[in-house]
Length: 163
Image 1 (cartoon, rainbow, N blue to C red):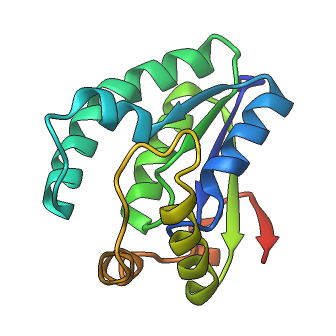
Image 2: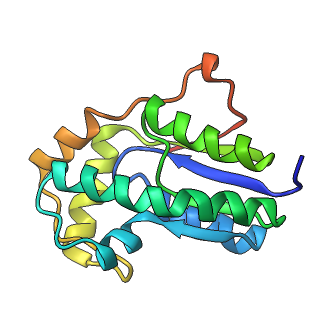
């Protein structure tokens, strides 16, 4: 097994995943893959959830082999995406299994109302690194319906971040 670790995050929209991903990448001297950055540079515009799904699949088809190769070279990777549904976590598992690497799932346990407050503040403050326009409360609620915390049966190594 490789000494590299694939770190990935699970948490609602605006729970702090990007901030945590950057911190982990810095602390672990790991390569950061931020889906929002890839999507903002490669897509021809994302105006709906279906657009996001289409472009996300395309980006992941390119990122996947790069992530595996990076891990096989002995370098840890942090994914700033890919952990909010069982299907996404199956994809992540396929990456670290193929690479023969270790994994760590970082679970941000902020509740929906706290995340909504953070999102509204973020929409006003527009922090550096925000790659997409404001997200409405309606969109936030629709996106949060997809969120599923990992189950015990998924058998991931989990670090929890209570909020």
